[in-house]
Picture 1 (spheres, helix red, strand yellow):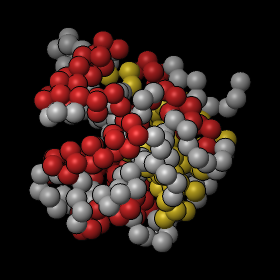
Picture 2 (spheres, one colour):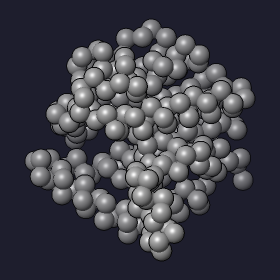
Picture 3 (tube, rainbow, N blue to C red):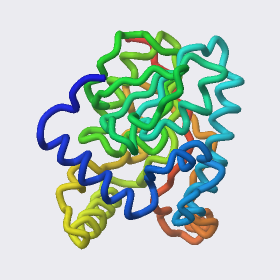
Picture 4 (cartoon, one colour):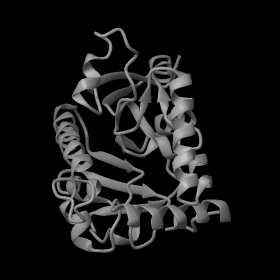
Length: 251
């Protein structure tokens, strides 16, 4: 694996790793990644992992139904729990910026090819994957729309992006307000710089995307009450859906 890049990126990785350890989203215990997404051995985020376990089963079902899937890229793989789960059935590559002991460094499964790289500049050949899975990853890109273009580049013609657990906002204003709350949170824990690499998509970003045609397979409501917001005449809040994105043919 290659060097992790410039100081700002290394600083982000190290700071974010420490925070995730405190929050229970990372662990140096190898049993943590091995049992995800069905069990959170830290006991700190069981609700989040229950949702991600359901989404994982949806992704597996989608993979089984898509024709000709052999080469799969786990984008923003983190500790590689998803790559491990897929490696028995597919040729899996895991890519992430974090190569430490809570990231790709903890992924020792010889069936998984590990690569260090950024979402916006993937060190991969064009057309080299049948499916790219981005689970809770793309919103950590400095430019999520640019990341989609790069994902499209590494997908073969007719390839599919499975996008899961990244926030989708109703409007740009809703996204900006959410970012301000994120900034306030990171400021409260002493790391406001982390907010610079946290964004999300608006529905229009995906609806009018030049690279993919998206179809939801899960609406991704955070709370069941959110499903009633439109009925009540309110704008629904953030969603964390599961989407299938078919790569568009060149025009």
